[in-house]
Length: 219
Image 1: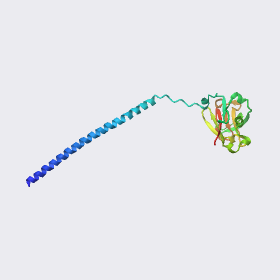
Image 2: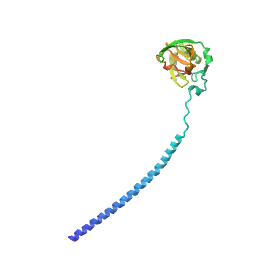
Image 3: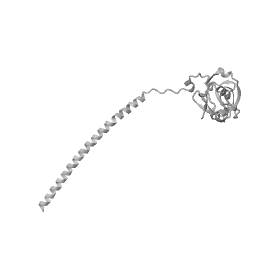
Image 4: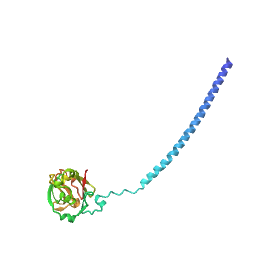
């Protein structure tokens, strides 16, 4: 019995030793695999890091962006000129301040809600300027022509939209005026031209430094 027990203990120790060797080899193999994976990850990430560093360096030395040119700068238009356009339907019409002053003027008194004061303007009715573009006005303003609209733009790029019907007194109450004086004086920093929409309760569409009016079609 003692011999049999000794034989069993020897087999058990032999198995334990074999298991220990197996685990040791397995652990060694796993360490090698983990090390290889780590090297592979480093090799893959290194080009990405280099590219990101180069891109960051390129951004840091990039020249500052140029400011966007204003509407008048883009067209090379003189600052004291009003440009009227109607797409491909009519050649552009450029009106200098001197030419504008020679056109028939009307006077208009409106309430400026921002200043909480009444102001008197003198200028040319917008409808008279649109006639120079052969715009559909009066009896011609019907049907498809009612899809026409106007974009008025200032020298700083600020733009507003009016329907063509708003500009025609035969169709709409109120007056839309392109003014060149206020209270008998030139418009100074707000000029030389300013759009005045008398029927508006707020002067948000009173474009200062008006440089262009474009007749367009919504169709």
